[in-house]
Length: 349
Image (cartoon, rainbow, N blue to C red; front, side, top):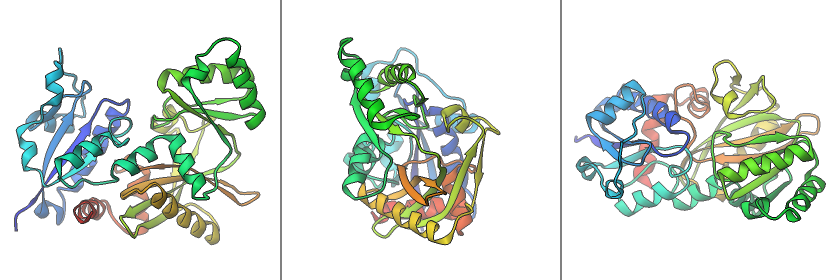
């Protein structure tokens, strides 16, 4: 039986380029062990930091060394050229985190190529990436969320009369502390926790430099829980994991600095809370029309037993140490089986 040729697409132009390389390295290793070695051939396809697609030995070298590349003096025409090996790919496994990777743009391109790919399509990816669109979809579905306010860059970078009034309105609606987030960045990039009017002004100005859409959320004293989802039309939920950390909140530095955060799997929770969160995770997955995989994050207020849906990540980190594969390992699906199932789900979809 002929092997299935998997196009492992990684790198990209987002700030999560290095994370993407690490995820792709782990997936490549998972596809080369056990039964997978006899089922799949891997073609690494690397998108460098300037957007040039590279396949073959150079892409393999990036995977092995985990050293990013940037093509010098890029011509616009180079951005439209695909390596010739691309035409032989049977299924794509995109591992592109952040903008231009999990926001529906690459999914639209792969759809036009008419080749199956792992993960959500254009709609699920786009809604899952934009925090404002996501929250609106969740609200329409009746999913519980913390209070939030959505604003645009034009409101922040407006005349001196409008901006103070905007801050006053946010302060009155949400109080402090609250969190200011660019709507379309991943890995906690550009997020700030604010406790005063002056901090709010600074955080809004900073967030506006990252994105033209900004969301501000009410702070809540809660445990941070995560649930992995796997499947297409009949998705399944994993056991739950909990993230604890030694910083003020789970920012980019804490997330990717060794020893700053800890993962607890399975999370120590009452069974009724576990079941409820798993149900909400599947509902969130279906609400945005996700497919294949997603990690759904929650806040749990232990005193009141209130559960709030934080966000869905349709292309979560995928190293051996990332929460998503660890949750499935604890549920009974090892890494080798997980990557195989994701490819099979792509072919099924």
